[in-house]
Image (cartoon, rainbow, N blue to C red; front, side):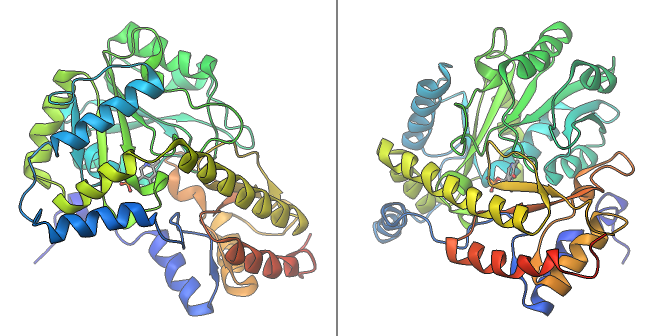
Length: 388
Ligand SMILES: Cc1ncc(COP(=O)(O)O)c(C=O)c1O
């Protein structure tokens, strides 16, 4: 009756605890990164029509060809990298599933996988379930810069794979060409594949998104992960995709066919409508998110927190040095229970002991009214007894 050690090691996460605490105290939940508003009607309608039209049996293993074509077209238009829809695109149950498939497909037990720290927590789980060893490239607040030294410290002769993510969760960083070129240099020199998680690629507020796959020598070694979740506010649909060189996609397909096998057919029809959205859709999306970000940043500053710059994705991290707390977990608990606003303590996104202790992460994937409610509550912070 004992669980296997490979899953027992995960235990209950801080996210479960924060959600429980948020519910218990009726806190405004800026912890979990999902929208509290709905996805677009034209996408939902397309999925409903697909159900009524009888698209209710297994879809092809690698995804609907017509959706793969749209994904390849979108990737080519935005990165300049041309992929063959029938062999170089794979559709799965969210980017999360495909990242897991790719890690399983491309590493052997004992291999090392390099990832940025702080990281999206599912990378660590995937690497560990594959029996590989995680190595982290430390990004330090408030700038979260990707440096040559930090990268060199993480890479070794045992490195088998590099995972990058940008716009970056949790920091909101959008890396510069120079920073991404450091990754490209290492990947080329060591002939490594690179997994590039770009699920927030449409959510950029300062400069255009740059995919590492478009850097010299990178198209042939980079798999780019995309998703309906963030761009179309449909995190519950679990539709994501990966594009990449044929051999890497073939290996990932081999894992996918036994992990989920296929992705819900009607939702893939909905995804086709999503990818047909007019350019105005994306302009509006960014404008709305920029306004939400500005509202949250102003509220955090007014509460005497220290918000860090956010150029992408939908998270703002903020330091709390003016308040007397030992670490991020203690501060996040206080904020949730006493102030009524839930945030994530980012030490959960670190392997390095002590990493992420000095700040917390808030999401602004919320309606302006929700953010205004959080702002109202945060005002109590500046006057609290815990101010230094
Ligand atoms: C960096 C990153 N990658 C992937 C995902 C999940 O994407 P999906 O919903 O397509 O699995 C998230 C969601 O929080 C994320 O932050």
